[in-house]
Length: 126
Image (cartoon, rainbow, N blue to C red; front, top):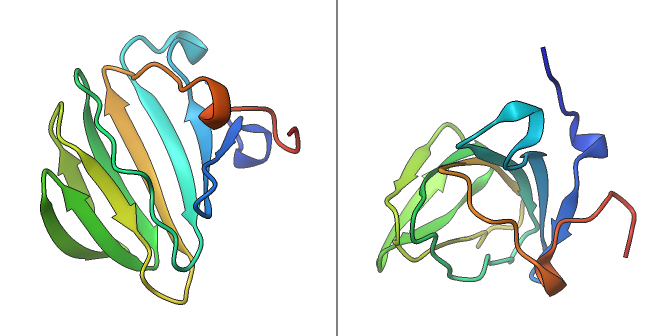
């Protein structure tokens, strides 16, 4: 059995008030085709619009409410909602509320982890 607590997961601070923690990285624990993140989105934050050309993805809203954008369509989401994102679809989530929004994301096949400004780093590192 393999486990990965949030407290030791590499994190990515996106600069828009969203912190992504990489719970399952490509290749971790022998995973071949899956990446999983836990994301806390501050009130008013918006994830940059982006796409994963080869990966399908889901977001599962765990806490709060927000507005999901997928391939130009916008829809309100709340805790308990799953959003499916097809490969290549531009997507983002916007927390337009005054409360924190939390979601879990899973992608398959696993995307390449970002480098540079948005690279995942050990908790507490700069």
